Image (cartoon, rainbow, N blue to C red):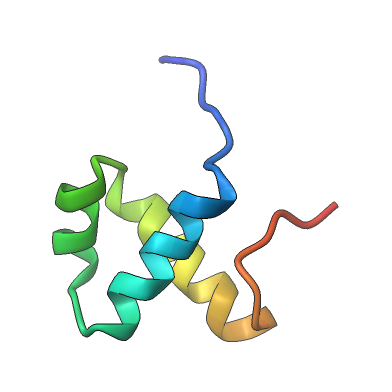
Length: 56
């Protein structure tokens, strides 16, 4: 398996912006070229915590 990298704040914000524009998780994943599981995780975290920022 490859080494994963943390997404930039901009890319996480873009995921949330696409979600707010009613794009599906699959569409966001294809558009930004990131795994759909990552997109789903970002959206879930944003809904629960109100932020997509990296937590310690």
